[in-house]
Image 1 (cartoon, helix red, strand yellow):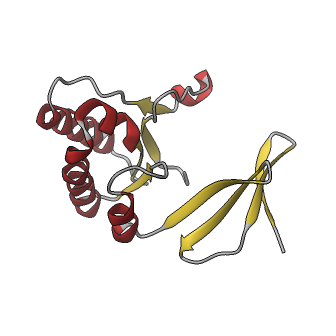
Image 2 (image 1 turned 90 degrees about the vertical axis):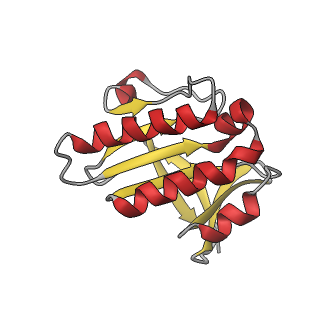
Length: 151
């Protein structure tokens, strides 16, 4: 994260190691209505960003969590709020979506980068749609994630 602080709004079922949760804020939606949730999420981001963060902030969002709680009709409004916030601050947003989710095509078009993780013959691979990249295997070597180009 290049020295940036982070907030994670995890996808459904994601669990993080204790050492990571000491370094980032884990944000789970908890408001009863969408508008209140967006306000709470904005306040959490502003609070994290206001603590004299010289390197900025990274927010990881599992969109499926918010869709399951508030419905897919709210997703585009959420993306609008997030993009506006990111443009006004030095914030990097990393969103995860699963194939088949409503609005996937729209969101991938407005994103600066679009990266795909895929299971190919029982191997996890990654490639870039924007910018276009080659195919790489995702491998765990000596407790570090490595991208191995597939030629």
